[in-house]
Length: 173
Length: 181
Image (cartoon, rainbow over all chains, first blue to last red; front, side, top):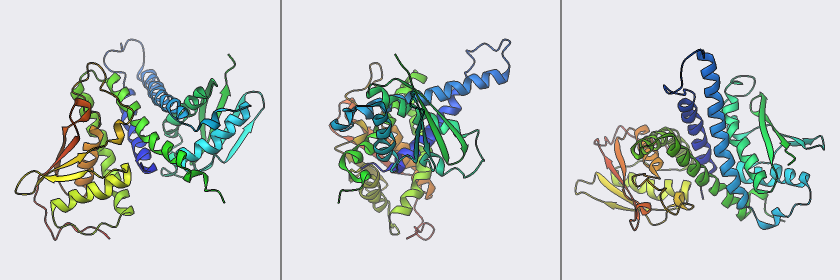
């Protein structure tokens, strides 16, 4: 019976440590004409993709553990509804607050009090820091969708903590 | 009336799996970042320490631990309350020295390794669960107790059980360290 708190603490520590580690590419990367800013930007992208990649692997594994009846979805929209209700409840003990779609493969999932952001602040503070707390969860969504047979691109945006939006764009093969 | 969604047994399991799987992904990532096992172990311990310093407040808020008078009481609480609360297991406690400052937590079952069959190739010195040692060390330090915490036995290395050794380093001052109710 692992407490949800344990996951939240682990996630917080992972963001702090992986960010610190990956944001400096290290002496191996040639300094050359690249300015410090460019290196920092590359470092940021590396960290986000590392976190996203971890979330993806976890999402895939979680997808494999879902109850069998959930795997027999008829429509894409049903899968997204499942993510918003059942998966979100299982992982974050609450449902997604809203789901919108353009019925052409793009979905916006909104959580008004995202548990991984809620301890940080309310309002427009720390907007720059928010993306690294969302990367893992984006990967998680992408990974679960992948196990359910859907290839997607998931990004997140925050206008005001702790509300965040996850944008899922289905990739047609 | 059906049970609320988050109480359904399958979701309970997903929640538990989430931590274990995330931990696995973390160890895998650290193995990519660091070539030497000692470095991965050190990093896991460091991260665990960071988590422990915060987790202890969460623990004290949720449990109603009474004031402890000895190291063995503290170790009992770690095993019977904390481990039970966060990992759902209750390790047994043994005392390893007559002055009662060295203890072992014996885990028959270790939920963290549920999905791990064996250590990755070339990683025979990896202490997969080293995060736990850091957590215990960090938590104890927040309540003013210095301790060394290491793995003495590890099922992933072929031992029968997993054994975590806790060695308390400073004398506990009774009057000074009162726990909140």
